[in-house]
Image 1 (cartoon, one colour):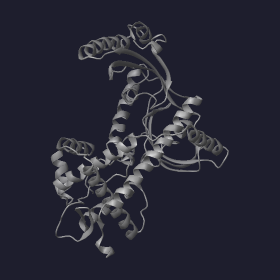
Image 2 (cartoon, one colour):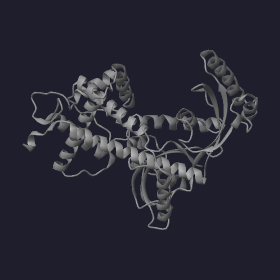
Image 3 (cartoon, rainbow, N blue to C red):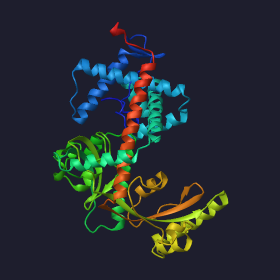
Image 4 (cartoon, rainbow, N blue to C red):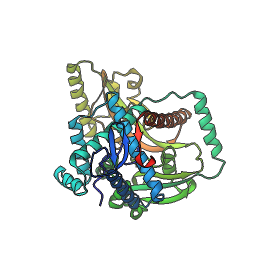
Length: 432
């Protein structure tokens, strides 16, 4: 089998281990990129890994010559991007690479020493493997930086996007090929049972974020339809899928994975494999009913006092001694929400600050978060409920804006890749 896969760049095709960028003098040269070399051996390793990955996913590959050209092009782009990232002052510390190595080992249920033996057995040097991890982390950071600088979107662009989606509602039926990982929640389950299932699903979501193979995890863990096929439910029209599934995947790009979502039956993680036909704009979405208590805390001493006070509130609420809403009215220093018992109303994923959003994702209804530091404030959150609800007009516009920004940021990154490639010295001897 191929060596365990390194964590892929964010939202990029997973880069399997390969020793490209090495200098194995016994090999022919497939390409020279800047001041580094991709050998024929490097290319063979990557091609073999790509074939194994496609086989595991049940995907069809192009003819051998075309595949070789595509894979070599991808390797050239990666090497050029990593060199560019270093030129603009980005770097990856040895500690970061150590942590990435430990994560890859853990994902593959190996110790670091066992991972090293496996990598070397596959014919790759350990230093070369670490160099590849460093490149992948650099490219990942470069991509994150591009995606973080969300480009502006005008109100008229949002209007146009929504009009197009609304028109699609009357056009040909959209179809989606979705894969799922599903863990059921028994009817009448206690809060503890629900929390245990959610905790297991969160652990699966964490593995996927670290680059684990969705189809393999679905085969191992999913207790739902399609588990034996890697979770694949096959191509279906939108009206033959749960509304929750359609609303969740509608704004994903093929290959993207959703956050954990809750249905009446249990918890799901969805992956959009393919889509055809324009879908109408979503009318419902998974939303969270949230309350907050905010304390001002500018100095270390104030933060320590606020943390202790909020910890005490969290314990009292969880043990049923007090109501969160009463404590919010009594303590919260945010005048807008304190009067409403801390009520933030129903919010969409991504609508709150990323720190609050990440904390919220880990909570089950009724749970209270740990105290969260937000600049010069300390915040305590309670998730009151989570449900699929109709979208308000403002929420539809917010979702449309987010989709347009992500599309634009992805285009910006593709443009950067083309620009960097054009400015990098590349020589492919077989073209001589």
